[in-house]
Length: 439
Image: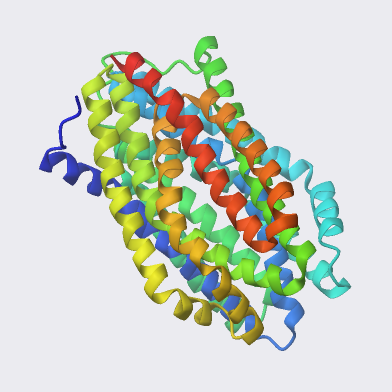
């Protein structure tokens, strides 16, 4: 039987979730400034080049998101079990892996940019400037991946305020340097990239300072972190590989969604590009509760407490559902206004309004997959996440090619909603196993 959470449990969830939500809000602010400083240059191809370069890095770095998620789950479990030496070892192993992957990105940067630009097939001006952006920004790769490890480690220790400080410091500095380098120095695309590189290394410096402040008071009771523990290294690689496969499937699903919209016509592609921003807005709120669940569930699994596990799941989900209902209300009441803010093209506005009902129901449909992802990351049950996502992707692909020929773009949106439902069902079926293991 599941009892209603206590006030202290609600307070703990908000203590963890609120800093993450605030940190997430700094992301669209940075994107808006990037767009504004480049968008006011004389030629449109500057903006196109930054857009292309940003998409390349979004896909490149998103593929390494397992460093953040895997570190959170492993840290939270070690912390919940009172294994403080292993808490340190988890971070050091993840950091070494991040350094290796960052160096690998440096080594393969030439073929990466060549293949990426070939896929975009943009104008010569855009491709040349996008290559400039890439060649500058790629030097931040080790810092970006190390920051994933730091943020994951802090969330695993229930210190989401540190994650907030890193994100806000990085994005705030990036905004200031954007203005200095582009508006002040006239460095255009290279200036935007350089601002990002400097801010990411500055964030890494702050992260290491906060890491030292967090780790120094920990009483390891004479133990030393064991980096070359064969079992833990194997576990690290297994967890990271499973999350990588899961993330790749997720990227592929949204890429297929965009590609199929493009095959209908340019207006549908543009309308969907506007509407998908609603899904991004949704993630800014729900990610806070999902990551709170990662920390709390990881601690419960590490401490072998079924009661704590149930409390974490119920409390985080309770608030996530309420926030999702709030999003539904906002999208229903202000959806047309938001569309008009995002685009001034009247044909795209009219078309987007036709499909906005899908975004109104999306928060209630999507919230369950967000929360179950957080729960399973905290429990480091990544095999179930991998398998569930692969099944969900298969459902999505079948739905796309079945529904799109009949319903057009409505079929694409229905397929996307079915994808979210499939993600929730596949993980929901595995959930009882977590409770048995926690006990």
